[in-house]
Image (cartoon, rainbow, N blue to C red; front, side, top):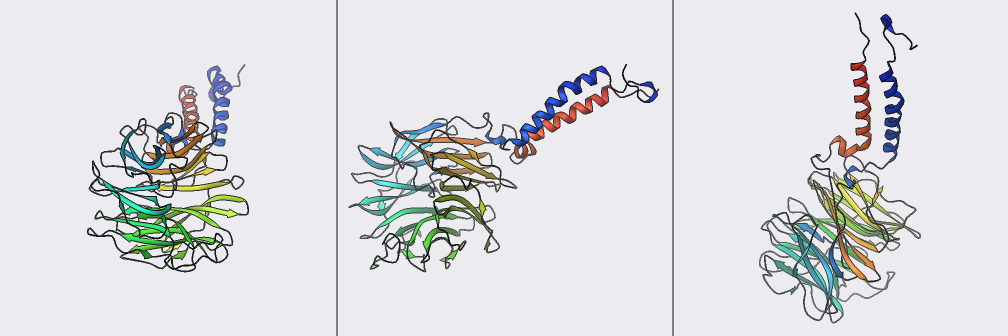
Length: 444
């Protein structure tokens, strides 16, 4: 006999007892398992397209340096990527385009030409839809910065915009609100002598901008002790330019930051520590605040750290990667909604990624098997696009992956943020409510 409840009603009818014995334990088990899983529903197989090959034949550093912008989306919604491919044995800068969210790619144009190696491309779009491209070309074996504009065709031949003689490399490019390009690079200051740095060379960060008529004379912006390397740059809606690089302070390399509002500010150290900081990348959110990532080195280890600038000061650094894994070459991008994406590579040749909504979600591994390097990100309010270089015995290629929200799920919704735990908890609640409704004791 079943135990009797109020007014003689059965307290635990057979149907409810069966549901409790079968459905509820399974739901609780699923809930526990889902809580233990990384909450990254936007990476479910239904939402993460299979990897596509952007270029089957590429240089082994095709997407280096990945703190330069390699991927943009034009007004028509097309994705445009810049990478390096060996053409007749010579590395050249190539553009490719996709009209179907990266499922297929076709060559768009070849930016560089001639029997001289060209590498390290970066690109940006202006409000009129013109595509601006800059890269390093090794004239006489020494780097020079070249530039070109694509508007359905090349509007002019490739143009050297850095001085000669002298080394110039690793350009960073940003286009302002009126369509004028601005370029940073690191080069050797005229009349400087090696000494005082680890590699016995002295590099500095230089700036030039185009005013609609001519490029400005190169301006040294990395004031302070010499040896400043690998700039990154981004523009905000007001036309300000934000720049970061790493610079020697006499003991270690530190990340330095400067902003241009008609003139460049004095650079500041982002985080003064006794450890090296390399390979910074930065982006700007919708509020005009800079966000920054870099490699934090401590002995033989290398991890990825993040900081945000607000109110004229930098936040404390956040560790994004596993400190037990050597990680390098971070890339950062911010969606218009403010969602932050950061990708990096590990010493085992895998690409990892983290996302920030209202908090940092767990890191996820995007690739497996090794051979993957130099990831470059492009964020949107529907997710993120990633390109990287994949190297294997048969050669190198450029690969692409799109990560997005579930179809019909607004970004940032409870399901998008919390995923399976929300769904399982909701299912549990529905079962309990149904049992209560259908087997409520009679009162008459």
